[in-house]
Image (cartoon, rainbow, N blue to C red; front, side, top):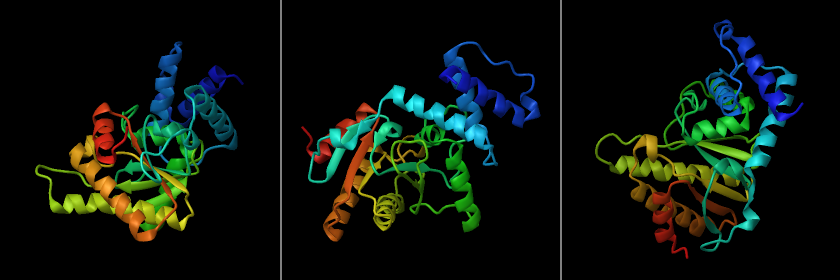
Length: 259
């Protein structure tokens, strides 16, 4: 199968799972097909899937990743000892683990083609990730607490693991509790990563954007918590602060003294 054939196969397979999709026509254009496939993947519940579907999906996502391009950690230069600042798509970063800003359900973003990092990570990891998260949550028996962390394989992403953490949602004034919970997200991820012998971890800007944590204060907490953890534990784990927006890049650059 070529990439177009894989995409059509996946769309048809996803259509066949739900009778409500039977009257929907598949668009001819590649961008429209890609958007449709992503939407179908985003709204799909964590249900069993055939081995054939997984084989085609994995081949499709691996080719999409190849086309986007992978950034190797070894190609980056640290801004401080063991600390990196990188602006780019975290789903293309080849390090040991990346951090996902999850919600309390821990099942990924169900909003079709939403721009959040949770949506992107689940989309390009594949349906296996939602299934793995669902299994963890079923075992736990309740929603994830803010400030805690879980770890799963990364499946079709170029990293080995995804760490999922639920950041605080800021409502109105920023409180001391909000700040403590955000620091807990970073520390929980670092501690969990250490337990799994993770050698490098990339943090996104947890709780900013949809969760309304002020970007500058969030970055300050992130940098401070990571530095304190490194000093306390003498860990050799490398930490990458991953940003996407120009605003965040400028904030982290100033905090880390990057050239």
